[in-house]
Image 1 (spheres, rainbow, N blue to C red):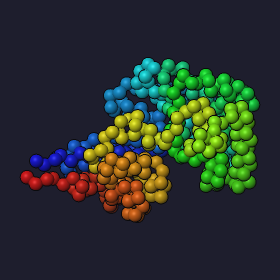
Image 2: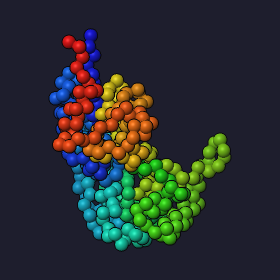
Image 3: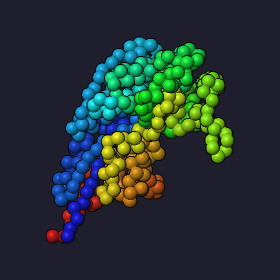
Image 4: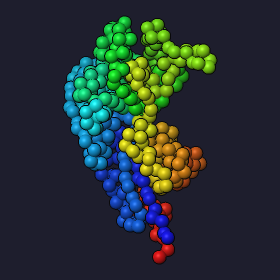
Length: 367
């Protein structure tokens, strides 16, 4: 008996790197070259810009009840900008997906302001959170990546009623206990430290003097928070578990930190969506085909490709990567469990590439 090969195509839609229709094109190219294979296609996202729209797109294509609610919220400089909340499901069982890039994205302010984000605020994310909760959902998922604001989430917390000096922070946290908050991050960086939120701005061209000043300011913020909400102690060491050192607390200039203070469960965007969209349960027993724009030093270390490849490896599912351009050696890929990577040849598109790889990985069995 010849076993029908099963192929799970996963397309990385992070940051709109690949256009709508890529999912169908790649799956179609594979099916044409290997009509004997069972091919299914899914999209995933890293949690940054475009996160909510990607979830809504996937829900709609799967026949899951999904609605998009447009709202107006203040940007980092206080000007009103449009945003959208994607609600998947119905009633208290529904989840609202938010995209902080719509509210505090770096594209919303001039380059001169990005060089020193003093005065920019995360308050708009607090407004967006209130809008989402007012929709009557039981769960709010916040996708967070790079941000123009760098206030440690102070503006967000103040907007929710914590006060200018966060004197009502405990009451705000209690108020949000009935809403399941989830933080979907593009990075697991902490708020403070050599690899924290302020240090990461150096990679974006912010001067060392500015990043050092911001680090000091965030340190003062955490001292205030820890005085108001003494951190719990580790049962083994007896030392305080400082929230500013938590993975993901440094995302979006500290918006992650503020959400974690409100009780948000934290995971990377791809790992969260592997669960939320049911993709993770489809990996066992399949060939996993990851599709991304460029397979390079950035996509191999964080995002959809490494998180999905590791999930596939945990269930012993082989993985291959298709990309317009491949700039990663075989050894780096193998550390993730990637068995092979394939880039476009002259004159090919991704559908053609899928067909070429399909003939290698899912050849027809003996007749």
